Image (cartoon, rainbow, N blue to C red):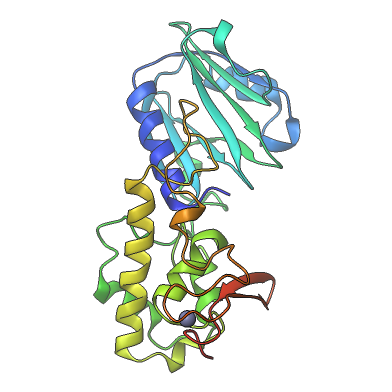
Length: 272
Ligand SMILES: [Zn+2]
């Protein structure tokens, strides 16, 4: 599942590759992933030039030069692949965008994703993206900001971090190691964290997410050019390593139920 490092890299590659290209056609094979009747979507997008590509939380926003925006959410994951020639397009897709120079990209959602067209005027109030919080790659995400965000909160730390309105971009996958490195139990209450806990948590978020970005993101997902990232299971500390020894104390790593999610923890290093 794509989290901040994967989304960041995909948005960056899409921006570098697609800027200035003109949309010639949009193929929409799965109506439940779009927000408009296909013909209206196609009418409003065709002929427009790509002006910018950025991300907000787990959404990739492609700004067109005609006052429209394409909002893409990968859902549980998706192959978003560029092609230099339609003959080289991916075999399976639900969405395809072709540009006037013959290049394009396809999207194959693994489970269920979203591909919306939203005008500039509607973008600010768009229900999926309007309340998304600042992500850890954002320069405004400082230790001071993070600690002010936690102030007065009573929720459990994992539930708080998973809520995209608080901090965007972190999902279950990177969470295991973030909490392990900070030596915090996922169900520890934020009101029980001291300044030192908060500092370790901040550093841990930055360390894990920056390391993945440097390594080209998660190794089991492919980028815009079909290349796999370098952040493989070898990099994980406790995530997906049930019954293996904790890298710090040697205790067996456990898989526990934490509300609606599961968590890999070291029961000795991450006491509740
Ligand atoms: Zn341990």
